[in-house]
Image (cartoon, rainbow, N blue to C red; front, side):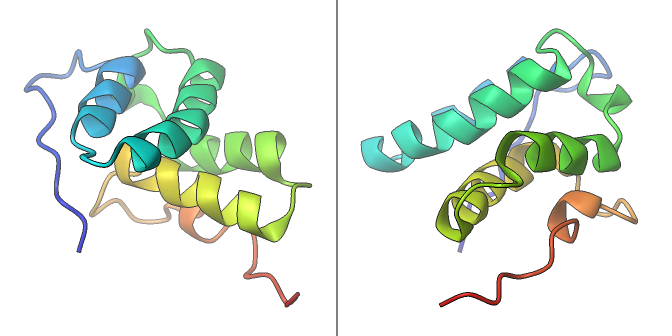
Length: 107
């Protein structure tokens, strides 16, 4: 079960601060290395200094689709799994980053 990461208090939490807080919470260096790819590129595309509160959930889905929409199924799933915990905020309706791309039918 994943660990919940407490973000710094305040509306001024940037995309980069949220990304860093999430990545620091990962204990395994291999997981950190792999997640840093998805989290880092997504954060860059959203603008790292932007307040996280201004990022709409559908923007996250659009960035994921832009960066990895045509990639292999395993790459898509890995990048989406790495990015969702740090940017998609629980309790918000319509988080498209969870459902933007249908599950792969390939084996």
